[in-house]
Image (cartoon, rainbow, N blue to C red; front, side, top):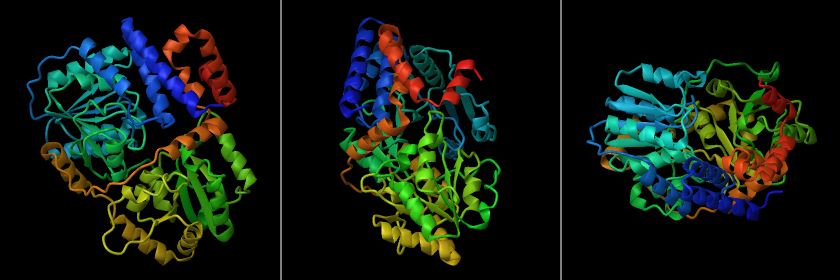
Length: 503
């Protein structure tokens, strides 16, 4: 079992390993320990920023990365570690850069030749003022940081947009050294840990929740944080179809990672059961890759389907790369519980679908911040009362005109691309945001407790995170073997066998 105390103890120990490795000039080993500490902090919501990690990143940037004077130009750099179609905000920010009609460099940690980046590659090929730079995957972390610095120094941009993962120590190290470029961090994971709170110059978050966490949990000055809502991408692969016969009913869609639907006494599945019992003419589809992946988490969902007898009209679709087309074909979007899905809500709204969200205070009651503020009368989408939530679902199921009307009204609260492009330009070049700030307290304890419960009863990610650590593998082999055994025990055995034999 993994406890909160055990997680914090391991987090501190990994930082100690990193410090000891720096003192012995084992810099790549130090970075690896820092990456693992970041992974624990993010996965279990241990904190939102950490001064020790920030200081070690800055120290390594100062001592190990060589960077010359940059004679800045009017160019801009977009650094991105995602580079996957319809994931993160890559396409939105590239679209804005293209609309500005200025020279820019796109630095990525992945290959644009990958099938998963086909749409992004198409964006690049549509213009001739972009320079693409792919970071070689074979490099060590210190080498990667130096490579980034060298390319940026040669390009000499005045500004940089940075979209990275929470454990990208090499990338943050590089940007810590590049002080002559104005560095804007894209706060993609506003509700969890990331590096760079003491390093980047400005921060672009997409809702009031992220703004408040930046100020109260990351200790960032308010004049450095800008709110900029985004819009969802609207292109995906062709529609792959529904399970045979299910499409004849009213179609409800829901989806997300496992953490979105786990806990609170199996409340999500009890909610689905009530919806199906009260509405006999519906098919309920659940879409999501992270919830039903390779580490045996499917067994939990199968158990819930059997326990609540959901099998007849409840369909698990898994990961769908036709997600936009799927939204075109359904009638209502049902939010996940206890944690709502903001991006899924946006996609639903952009496709004229009504949204109904049963909300858990502190976990999903801020969901409406993914949409533009209401102007005048607006349909309610977030419900704290289960009876009112179920009544609204029933109304949409029974009244086709009402759900169409509500969907059209909700679509007006999605940020238009053209407005996004202009407002982002204002932030980058004028340090001005059009969006009003609303201050409130945000409690991260509920997220942490929920995630630890998921860890102990379902996901078992702790050992998977730690077996990747080179320091533990090298310096503590017996401990490493123990983590490896835990990982194997909790893994899906068919998946594990394929990994072992290389298929």
